[in-house]
Amino acid sequence: MSAPAGVTADLTRAMELWHRGERLEAEREIERLLRDSPEDPKALRSLAEIYAGSGRASQSISLWRRLVQLCPADAGILRQLAQALLADHSTAEAIDVLRAAIALEPTNPRAYNNLSGRFNWTHTCRKRGLISAICLS
Image (cartoon, rainbow, N blue to C red):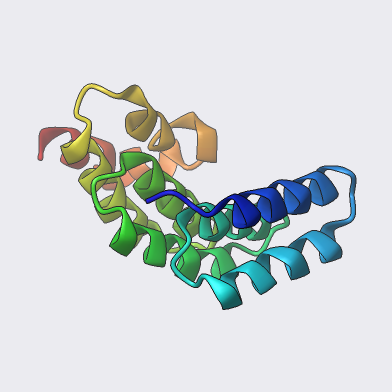
């Protein structure tokens, strides 16, 4: 599904605003794009990344969930959802989402990496046997 040229240009402009530090303006632009095209995956992903990158994991989660519905075979989106869930302290659900990502791409190390040092919760998972449970399932 390809976005119309105008939407792509607006999204590019919004991301340029974001990178220049004009975060509020960037968010408003993407939110406006989503009012016009609520199922646009690029706009949804951009806003989810902005929310996640600015410490608003709980706001990004609903956007990642919408993206999972739109792109169910995209393991990258599942990994992003899992990261947001972890940041929101929803560890059990994040593990289920990472299992789904691993099922889609069993040889891609990123989902396994998300289970280890990147989130600094490896020790907790090992204590609970979660890493071996995921790898063995």
